[in-house]
Length: 346
Image 1 (cartoon, rainbow, N blue to C red):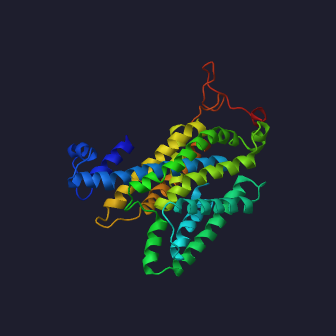
Image 2 (image 1 turned 60 degrees about the vertical axis):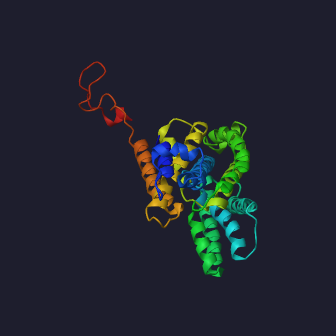
Image 3 (image 1 turned 60 degrees about the horizontal axis):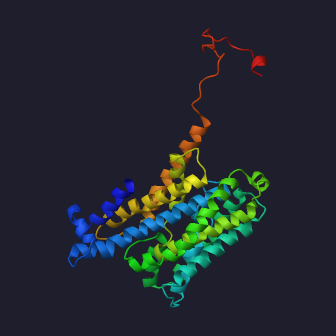
């Protein structure tokens, strides 16, 4: 329902305002201004926000379950920074790159960033070591992006700055259609990867006892997340921290579930987050548009931290009845409980 309401607002609000009663006629086509604005500008932007959010939400869950850490997000493992560096470098170096090749450059950059993280952490190291090493690799790649920004001229600097924050401005149906070939590869890989993630959550020793090789499974999970993230970064830029909040919301809906049940909910919540964040990005300072990545960071980081803290507090203080036999506690037969000695408690 939240996604439907946000999508309705995305199609109707703005300049010009399209009334809800005029929306069906605008979606079915026509030559008037409302049909052009909705069909050629707002609808492809909405579709791109839904697809990008779903990919980022699913990729965040894959990384978190593979490394058994809820802070394992693309921004902390060098994947998003590597993809952004792969797209920004040809622009600064004045190398003419066709639009169809940009996802390949993002894919190569994301692969290099993720592979550097796993190799630097060591194949046999713990998931925590992978996460800490990924933060260092991401910082190094971001330094490379800063060097690119220093070398860029004023016009390229503005383009790179807006791109690095993540933006949906000016996107068309061509940008949306460029994502479908990657989704045809990523969706079957996700279906095959989800049961393995549920086994990895048990721990490396238990997973190995069940016939899963943890290190190879992590490489495969990284490959799936790269295929999900790289095309989105190539088109929209690194829309930050969606992969952090969406899995938290999915787990909150079904605390007793596993990766198989959380995966569709994480993708759906990722789409909701990006669509909702794009509304203030487009309308808050109209007619000037702000990058959607800035709004997702403002929304996802505090909300995700609050969910983490509340979840840990709930696990730390479970609502369980007091044990029988304590002071003032009725015994099973209805008599008042008698305080027990330390030896009896032991």
